[in-house]
Every structure is written in structure tokens, then in C-alpha cells.
Amino acid sequence: MTNTTSDAILDRMMALHPKIMDLVLDRVWRLLAALDNPQDHLPPVVHIAGTNGKGSTLAMIRAGLTGAGHSAHAYTSPHLAMFHERIRLAGTLITEDALTDLLDHCYAANGGDPITYFEITTCAAIKAFADTPADYTLLEVGLGGRLDATNVVSSPAATVITPVDLDHQQFLGDTLAAIAGEKAGILKRGAPAIIGPQQDEALDVIERQIARVGADPWIYGQHWHVSEERDRLIYQDETALLDLPLPALRGPHQIQNAGTAIATLRKLGMGEDAFNAAMTDATWPARMQRLPLAGEVWLDGGHNPAAGRAIANTLSNLPKRPTVAICGMINTKDITGILAPVVDHLDQVFTLAIPGEDNAVPAADIAQAANDLGLKAQAFGDLETAFAAAQATGHRILICGSLYLAGHVLRHFGLQDTAA
Image (cartoon, rainbow, N blue to C red):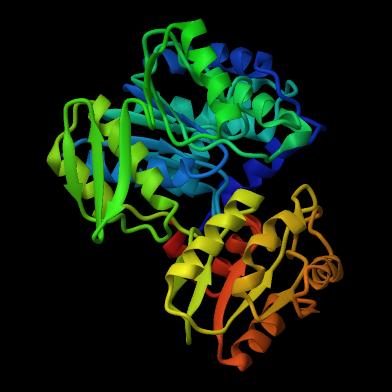
């Protein structure tokens, strides 16, 4: 797929707002009004927030709906290899021609007024979803929830909050309670609130918001449970006990994401076909994705301490063998917090600055952080030489630290199609 035209429009959109991050909804409401309020004409919406697991959970919900014969729009971010990944229309990636027309229309409707890149592209997605028939709309929050550009639907069919953890503290607050409060901003009166496993501090805040707005609670540990037993996923709630295949997505943490997806599908009135498809048919790139390259190569875009713990748990469940990591990160992330959980699973770390990213952490800084944790580390100037050094070890290779690095890897190896 060529995307020269849409890329040019996206570049123009980047110039519409000088700030990197500015969380308000005024600009979104203004543009939506200019677009004739498409948010009021969407197919039933499932709105998903959380720190970790929201993309995987959305992928399983989407697979479940498809398996039950329903069509679903899906909006996710960020993209890995190309912007088109963010917008699925009734299950199919938006075409280049449709994206170009859509972006042109929204750019003109905005009239040159200040607006962030994420805000205008979110409005574009909502416009596309309103104009295209489907049975459901799945919206993934970009950042936080309360002031996120996706938080414009007054009566969603369901709201979902996956596990909340520390991330984006500079924008959402530096405590778990503050971050949970932002995530809980998506909850709406009368709408089912499907809540995945949470730490107590976060759950207290979420439960207070459920009571405050009058949402319908459906909380892990209270209203539903999920576990792995004898290589099967066991889901139980007040009226059902389900014995299902384990999720196709790798890692022990996917059990809780799968439970959240099943709980959501249950609230949407789905049945056995949906539950089985959610487990067996879901795909979500750069989340412990096995790459079709020589040797054993895994790609993960996790970028916070909770993601580091999830990677460690996944590695502990793989056959034991020496493992090296290729790591690149963005400077807003906690380098030590991400690396510390995986120290015991790695023999060596090869670091690089993510190409083309102004906020990339220098390779030497990541190497120093790894050294401080007791890991042998070596800095490289580019992916090609880092990957060659990793392959020369003959060990399992884990590429990790950032979704931006994951996207660069997929493009470098010509694996863009695996991101779709």
C-alpha cells in the first residue's frame, strides 16, 4: 500500500498545534460540531481505557464479535508501521483513498484552528465510523480517559478499564489514585463498567466513580473471575461457568485480558461462538509477537514497569534458553523500571537510539542503566548492527522497550503486513 498522499496531510496536521501534549476537549468538541457531530451517530460503542492490556483486550473483543458474525469498527493507537492501522472500518483497514479523502475533509473543517494531531485524527476516525455501517464501534483511549479525545460518547454500550499502573505521570498524575481517576473518567451513567484486575488503590478510586456516575459495575474479583487451569481458560460470573481455550496472545498476563474481554462480550449479549473466537482468533502485533526471522526472535512494544513484569512472566513460561535483548526507549519512560523485572531472564542487552525519534534515549544511556542493574550491555548505532550482534550469539532475541522501536523493526524487516 502506498500512503504518500495521506502522509502529506498528516504532516500538515502535525503543524496545527505547537504543544506536544495539551489535555482539553474544547478543540475536539469544536471540530466534531463542524463535522455535524458524528459521535452521536456511531454504532454501539465499547470504550476501553487502562494502562496495560487495553489493545490486547480490544483485539480479543473484536475477534469475538467477528466470530459471532458481527462487524466492528476499531480505533487504536499508536500505529506501528503505517497510520492506516489505527482505523478499521467494519473489520477492514481503511484504504489509502478513503483515508486521504477523510483527512482532507477534516483538515478543511478544522479551518486552520489549533488542534493536536491525536485530536484531529480521532475526529477523523469517528467521522469514518459514523459514515460506515457496522454493528459495533471499539474505541481505545489514547491517554488517560477523562480528557482523552475519544471521550465524547454520552451513552456507550460498555466501558472497560484494564489494569491501571504508573505511566505518563507527567500528564496524568504521579500516584496510582490520580491515574485511576483519569482512566475512570470514561465511565457513564447506566453503562456497564467492566473492570479488569486492579491494585487496591486504583480500584478504590474506580469504585467511587462508578457510584458517583451511576454506572453498572462488573468488577473482577467481585462479579467475575478468570483463571488458567490445566491449559484451559476458566471464566466464571454470576450466571455462567465457561471452559475455553487459552488465548492465542502470548503471556500469563493475557489471561486477565482474556477474562476482561469475555466479561465484556457477556455484557454485550454474545454467546459461545464469540467466546471461543476471542480466544483463538485474536491477533495484536508487537505484544510478544514471534517474528518470522532466522532463529527465535520476539518483539514486544511494552514501555512501562508493568509491561516489563509482563515480559518477564512470559519469558519464564517459554522453554529455558539463553536470551539477549535489543532495547530502545523514549525519554519519557522509566528505563530502570522497564529493565529491572527482566534482569534475571537476560544474558546481555544491545541498545540503540530509536531511529527518527527526537525523544529517543541515547543508546549509551540505556546501556548504562542496564550496567547499573548488573547486566552486560553494549550500545549500537543502528538496528542492523545490533541485530547482527544479537544473532551472532545464537541466543533467543527479545526486541523491546517501545512501540516506536517495534514499528521501526517491522518496517526494517519488511514485516509491515504483520502489524495489520
